[in-house]
Length: 511
Image (cartoon, rainbow, N blue to C red):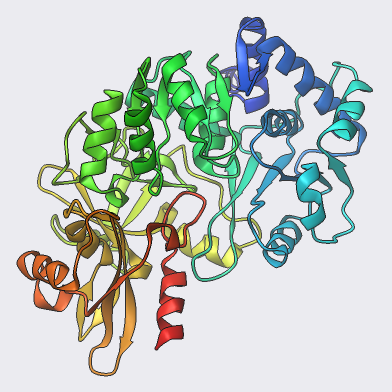
């Protein structure tokens, strides 16, 4: 094949950029609603106009391919405008967590050295002093937008350019900035839609923070396919109930910590659900009875997912829990379009039934952590991304999650995985939340301690929990202590996961 033809084919057949693909979709669906936010409706045509004006604004401010914007905002339509306009220029949007302390926020900003900060007015007071120029959302943003036309520079981005930086919720130290490329974001949209048969024009409710992968990944995916994104600032029960009654939703995000409140709302308001294709995530962290209730009420299967900011919802998000089922097993199925290995500490593949760290390669993977060469070299060794999550592969090819490798408890030479204990405790319908953490022990080195929350109308005793563990677990795996706390007392990340390091710190403080 001639070199010139190969170059032309490469350009024509390659993965598009997010900005270019959005522009093509918006022109096709100009009159359709792209974003709904409260009473406001923004059509694809209007959104494209605003994105083009913002692209021109950013270019006029001197932002160029490879530069970074720091975005500090709650969920609002402008969040997606900024990501799409930056995408046109090959500029990376660093999605800052507004819940962080000033010290943590200063670290995240300094890490990426943004040329511009775009900030919600109510959050501007908590912004650390950095000397970086800032543009405030609201009247200042709208005034600048109005001064720029819709003629923008030709898109400069390439598929492997960074699109967004999403910060991981550092469990033992400061957050790391995961760089998600245009290629990864487009492939996440394709893989998820393919695996779960999400309808092209299905609605997505972006209520989880847009600085989190669930909302940013799937809001952008929806806008590339002609669907409507309902932007909601956090878990607002009445708004979510109205959304499921009025819209046909593809994937309804439900996360640990809010499922049971959502169930109570559905029952109390007797909500008539228009249609949900798939609901939920992270089934391992949700009580089985809560999964059964919410799926029955929505008449939608629950997503037995496993993924991360770094991988997107692949590598193991093919398994679904049918409506009304209280799962007794949570084995997962490997996604298409990725490769998986389970390896020992020497990176040798383990046999079926043996625990091993999951290593993956595939097109949804991120491009590494920003300014973290040593970490990237370790985690991407051998051409595979090593996730730090331990699984067992069953004879039928399914995968059982064991635990995060860093949560492993070494007790008297035995390996104890907290997730196994938690799954046992969650089988009691009176338990609403549980987290097992390590505690120092002079004899065994480390022992498990369980923090447990119970339903207010159905208290449990330590003796009852100990009996349950005695029936289901080997002696060395049983918690040495049960600590009862309220459901809201569990410290959580933005994705609803319990922050175990905070509970371990609490243990040490009470010792």
